[in-house]
Length: 614
Image 1 (cartoon, rainbow, N blue to C red):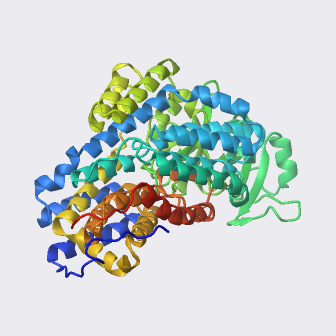
Image 2: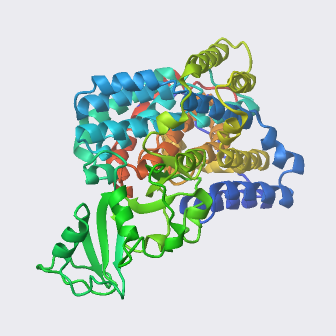
Image 3: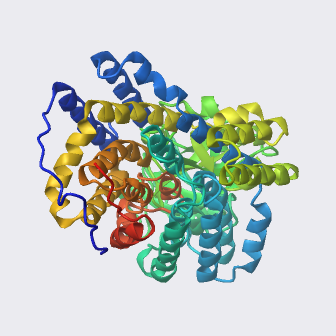
């Protein structure tokens, strides 16, 4: 650990900070927001806007101050960068690289190497979320063709996106937000490549960790595609129930189904909630038996036309209307923005709203095998659906789910890819050379993509991710309240009192640790907004340059490896990879703990803890 600098006037001076009602109120809001973000009792954007309203109503902030976040340059910049990232997705700007990747990768380790490096590089210049969105179907397709397990590949690309995003100013929305915040608080903004020296070192260490240890730490999970062992989108797992009037009652299962449905494979038999698959044959069918079966679309349609059995129990037959010539099969994974979360297919009237038929649900690599229509949907669930091409195209424009097969084909307009890359290159050049301020450059780039036809205006609005922007607006108000009321200085004072005797490097280390822990249970943007006023006040207490402490927050907020909710790319791979929460802990926690001392050592080397007059 680096040696603490000698501060003017000796160690930090003891002083008394009086806890005013305003400080107490703001700190209470901070604690409440952390709890609400962590427990997800309410949507995070609603929590953030609730903070804004409470601060305005209480008089802690004036109405103008409370609402100022809507006009904050950070909000405009982050929104514009979302549009630029959508341009990459819609024009297939990474398509050529994807194809070479597929041709060059010969095995699992080679594929892991190529994808993680490529994703890290792309995420340094484009928002990491669409980069991962582009690569999920690519990885799934390659894994299926070569008999590999997606669970061994998807978490590494999410981690690589996080690592690459930490190398530049525009790599993540958090970096942009912190830059705008510190500028408002009187500090120099972050330069385009100011983060690169440490970001590249951490990325190198992180990629090395992934390549060496992921084969030993990642689970082997059979997902929908690998379970079927067939060409993507051709076979599905669903349910059949034996009715009271069925001529199958009293008949042996194996012989009956082999004769009536020769192309249908029975995976399980459930009677009164108990699996009968381990019973010694023959299993004699009874009324209400639920059969979990696998088959292609034509076979399932044959079952549907058979009046002796009920396909998709709980979904009325009149809702199932098929046109064999037009049907397309796909897999949709629920996203954090999905309005379906917590609702059943029946409650959401899924077929009515989306014109798609759900043939099965997969959760953490396992098929939901009973009562599909009344199963509450969870984050990361994969719906096995079929419908017309038009219905599936409409689903791809929804923020409720991500299509896993063919998403890169459905979104692309390859003729516009060179324009997208040129626009992003100009944005990077303008930021690096200080030709124009970042918000203006980003907004100009977004408008250019629309004017040149790379994106429609509707696609641009859909790319804005309103929930993330509202989160930033609300937490900006809380950050301003912490600075105005002295709540940040209050926390900083006690942080210095607790750790200050060990020197500024120890405080930097503590700030990094607090930030990186918070970012696993709440948004990294919200964490950054809460911590920046504390860091700047702490630097004032210590009499040191605040830049190193700011960098501790920036790198700590991005080091979200230990949970599927701390970073959006982790959430995106959660369902398709069939992961469980513990898989992120096993793979991500050691990396997180490795980065803590490494960042503590590196940050003071590149941003020295110089003493400044108090």
